[in-house]
Image (cartoon, rainbow, N blue to C red):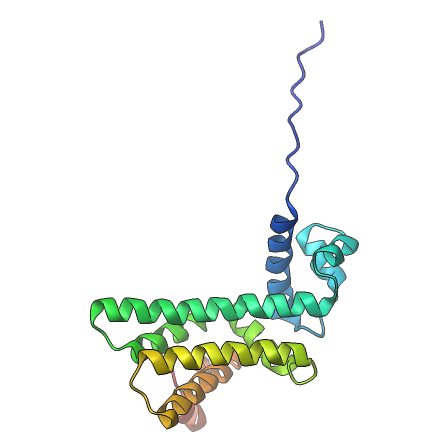
Length: 186
């Protein structure tokens, strides 16, 4: 007597699900090695697909790079907008809430390094520079709309955030010495 079949039906992923898998793998890879130093074959392997299929989902590496940068920028904006919404609901200062939320976001090494690599690679990738500029445009509008800061104070707020990026990227929270104390921002 032959046992009844116990085969299960294989579920195929949709292209959109695979795009998400590729974006996640690319976020990890780009955070570690940068946009320019990471081969697409490495990302395809990490996502469990062929390189040919990766290029069906993202026709060029630049398409993948800009999609990853956009994803990181969307996370950044969502964190800042969420901080504003929570602060307003609690009657707290939106500026302080955004600063605290940003400091917390920088603890996510992947998010931090994708941001750092994005700014560095933008110097040689005009399309990536455009994605970065659009992110700053949204963030500046959010800060201007949700705080009573004048333009000079908005500039200082963003300059402080960029210093936070650098200090987090170089591990300055563990550094000792006068320079670290002077520049420590979080």
